Image (cartoon, rainbow, N blue to C red; front, side, top):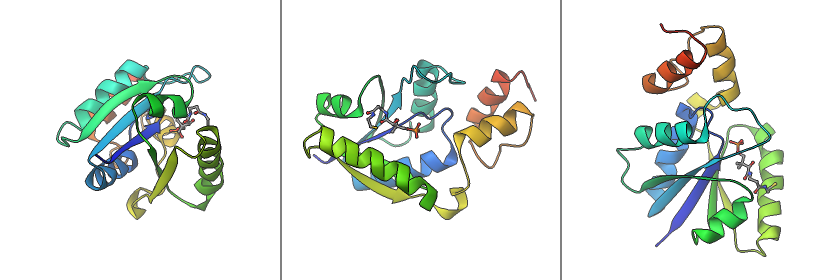
Length: 162
Ligand code: PNS
């Protein structure tokens, strides 16, 4: 069985992430979307909330599973016997950072863990979770960035009920 893991913060999941999830799930038999529990960051949504949101947003894709992890991605992937990491590339500016992480993971895993990149669909190339949060914090329009279900929860976090 061909399995892959798509790790990330997903704080919150955007249309850009969902596009990568859908496309990766069509290439692999099973795709695990895994939320990083990053103790160094103060996220808008808890890990549990992000997992629940991702489950809701991917419930129509039968070969997608949602999980979470702390610590190193190589250890999490090994535990799940997964050898391929999926990451999305929006622009050349993502490339340097992603290349460094993927090379580090390959070396740390003694060549066991490879990374495959999908280019983000052009209409989502400008999107980032941090800009979604900034726009929502000022009660701006995030309807082109995240599904309505996610938008409602993000606005609620900032005390905007409309
Ligand atoms: O959505 P993000 O925040 O860009 O995702 C980054 C992520 C989760 C892919 C990356 O930070 C990660 O894998 N962190 C886990 C810690 C780790 O394995 N570090 C070693 C590579 S530098």
